[in-house]
Picture (cartoon, rainbow, N blue to C red):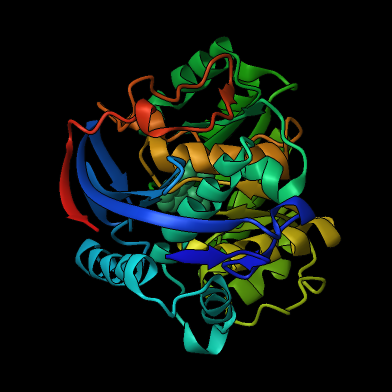
Length: 385
Ligand code: OSB
Ligand code: MG
């Protein structure tokens, strides 16, 4: 069916795209199951593999748009089963329903009241549609949305192992060329962790940026004690130190460490909220697949830029297809300026594309993928229409 696109999925598009209509031909939905190189601990779950969906949309002229829908257990609200069901319903409507227009889709996606739990499904379908549209003009997703894009983006090296590995891991990442490191804290004794952070700073020198992420592990008092202890290590920011986000300015007042929102952004429903009252707020860690629909994610990017908050794109252990979309968005949103949180691909033993998206000297290429790039050996075809 034809989709007219003055604005698609609630995102207004540049002039040259306003008369393009997508004549969709087919949709393929694959389910992947990819083993991790070693077990991955997130919050209270231990993962051995990652499951998710790859969506391929094609038009009648042979263009394709790829998307990924991979709810992360413990973080996403929906299970893989619900996501699969919702996705097949939506793509079925997209391909087969005469009534389905971009405007209708757009109205639905922007109606926050109707979608109190934004979904990973929106992100996958919308980025597949947007990528397809960009491909019809042979430009990247980011270049279509923002008019500019860098070829590569800096990545924050992720340290998520046990305390005894922190210093050797940090040294290895810096040797590999990373200039920003992110360390997962809030897992064992905070005093020991603070000590570990000071040791990392001593090892890497003063030129490397250090970010921390506590995933809401502490109460305010513990967080402030930790913050005071790591203060000499010049922390760029800490993500979500405490359980109660409204206490975050008190955390900053108590120890002088800037903080970033991550989980908090998944729960805020009111898209017009002002963040000005959050003294000490330095960054938004933006995981588009957890924030839900693309329009809301883009609105948060704009809010961040307007309010002098760093927009730090971040992944949720997507496969290479999802990562490449995030990399293209980051290449336009923050370019070469801000290290982004896409150092999750190395956790996978195998991927969904032939030439895996790897980080070199701390940089990742922002590549547009085509169907030729796909490696679907670890995938099962679930649905086609
Ligand atoms: O808390 O930031 C997190 C990945 C999945 C779920 C939660 C988180 C993460 C990451 C991604 O840390 C990597 C990064 O942001 O550098
Ligand atoms: Mg985080």
